[in-house]
Image 1: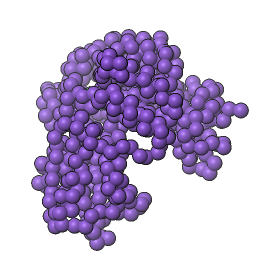
Image 2: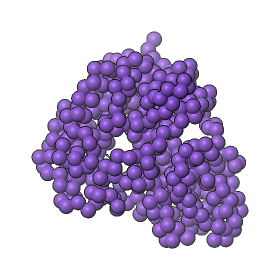
Image 3: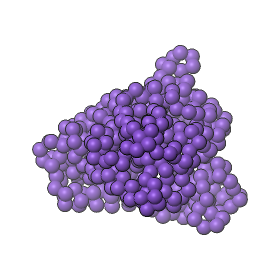
Image 4: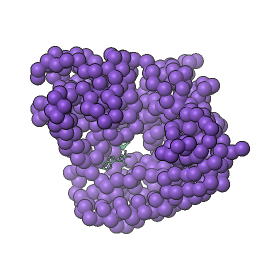
Length: 443
Ligand code: 5AD
Ligand code: SF4
């Protein structure tokens, strides 16, 4: 590669999960610190970071087509951008990307992106670099302080996964489970609150596997961390995602009953309602143990909104087993949920299992599942009409005078009134749709 001038503008494009959104923000923090500024909307950036997701198929093809589009657009304006590929595709296929795409000068994995500024120096000199090491804790210690002001913020507390569900690439791309130290997290949360965060969502691939040692030297779980963060006066709301049924301790259930700032919302993936499929997925919980957990949760916090993830068409899934998933959905009545067709991932055990399900069968199952989930989401929203609750104002709405925010149950609500971003306002929910609610400021 030829040496080039230092970039003045950047754009970070994050795909996939919220942990990628967090990583994208932290990469932006590092670039800001170097005096590089975000490219204005609609303009080509001098440096583009593609922060990729590898969870389902076509991820790599998408990266290559993005690279092609960026180089073409760059040529048009007379300067090709510096391109960094980050995230889980970088971790899984970094070498191939370097070999296939001469336009890419940096490949950096999710646990190594603190080294992005050094890699950038090299790229400016014309040197290409790949870094897919996995020392996650070193990364957090090397990141700059957070400076952006938002009423809501993500805080990664745990990374990696030791569960090895047979369909999933995460244990390979994000590495083993690690927990960030209690003191570092409390400090980062204080910093975020000082910078205007009123709501923090604690993130982790298995967030409820987080463990640490509190200020008194006692070991504690996610519940202990939540109780500590709830003491930060400016912080009004705490959420966490994504949990695993097997790491769910009673303490966390109790937290939902006792900590007012902990929002009544739980995202707890189940994937399937069939015990045979769950076993083949290596989920090590059953449909029944999952349902009992939700019962405990509802006993602790009767208004809790439930959310889940589902996969249809896992190898060997029969019609009858799929019906068990529908039956579970009918029983739980999710407020929101995410559902996917099984996608074989290279290197995972399920990819080579017998009984791969035909595409048409998967399509039909997904349609039926989504119809059921949409029905329940709509019913949940309709059931909220008439309630009075607090909404955290996040941004302006589409029309003048309109504001958008979230209810405690993570529904989007829009309303009019004399408010400011970051306010926590009391509203009455007056109308509902499948994806949002209309609200009125309470007098
Ligand atoms: N195919 C389809 N969906 C998948 N997920 C993870 N791996 C796969 C795969 N190979 C889904 C699971 C998980 C969510 C983040 O993505 O439902 O909970
Ligand atoms: Fe993937 Fe299973 Fe780990 Fe979730 S728990 S990240 S689905 S291996």
